[in-house]
Image (tube, rainbow, N blue to C red; front, side, top):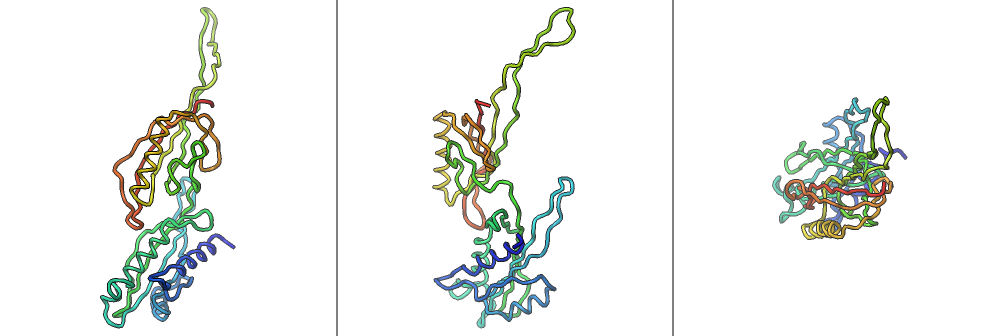
Length: 278
């Protein structure tokens, strides 16, 4: 099965599993071919509502300078109806079950979802796209991107930044140590090799956690590793080992923030290691 078919299948399955008050959130979920907007809006309003259509709409423009293809684009179209009023279609009965609740649950489920083993979803935007009186049709647009890092790096066998964080491991330059000298009247310089210097390695990205308490625990563990001052083996996201590393510096970049969709907290950060045995 192609990656695109797998993405489509996994998104449909994820939406079909969503529940509200012990019942399925959506009355019908299906994958559709992207066609003209008028026929699409007419078709989804004939489904068992609330309904969702999942459509892969193409691939965005790539980066020619780096010879990279663009991300895959996907639309999720949602529809719900109230026979009482247009307002109830938005908010639902007693404030639940309307489009606002449905859209929030769908975006929370799909945002950052891992698909086909190597793709992650990113919500780009969402907006209303039509519907008769008492019916709301809502569209969410996503991009499926392939991040370079899919596993958490470890330090001493521990995912120091936590499982939810986004971390880039960036080894610094490896520099040779040498001693140079010359003799009077002799052309040239003699160079004596003295081994290599220690190498800096950086972890950069975002510390992420489900709440403030969990992020506090991650930051405390990082600071404890600095106080320990022990050299340990670091393994990056691609399984490459870096022996004899010591954690020296923990830098927070800017304020702590909260994700608008999931409510998770995150903190931009940088960790600076020194690899002693290179």
